[in-house]
Image (cartoon, rainbow, N blue to C red):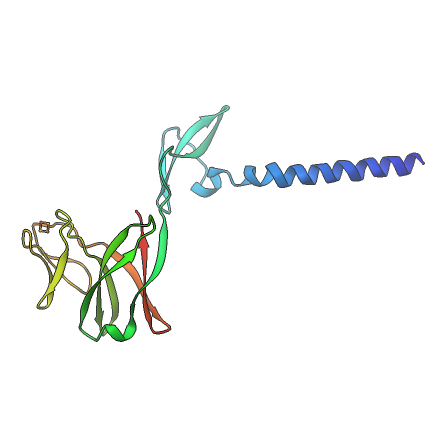
Length: 181
Ligand code: FES
């Protein structure tokens, strides 16, 4: 009888422990330290992982990685931007796609023999939209010119290349992966 009671008690405590692990344990193992990678050793040091910044903080006498408060994680969305048949070799088209935050993002698509390049339409000087003029992408506002194949600056005043997005082609469509960062 005693043996039965004691085994029932151990069964109950094991069940309670399992539930406790299910509720709390998962949260504990998903600690920012794991997300941030290597252990944190120097208080105040920052580390960026996948667009998220962590800072090394003292929590109850232990140094741990904590996500910087208020910083939104980078969001990513892949959208079908254009039908493949609508972009011939050598051609450029500007399309509007839905961004990760629900806003519209202008994307310049260019097909070359190397594949498809997707670039953010906004000039990196002051954000005016670029357009294809001859063999280049040109910003009419102050005259910056960019390569449609890579987004590299051909001439300023813009100093940085156009933001590039991943582009892929499948099932007769061109897909673009847009990030909010
Ligand atoms: S906004 Fe494009 S060159 Fe100034």
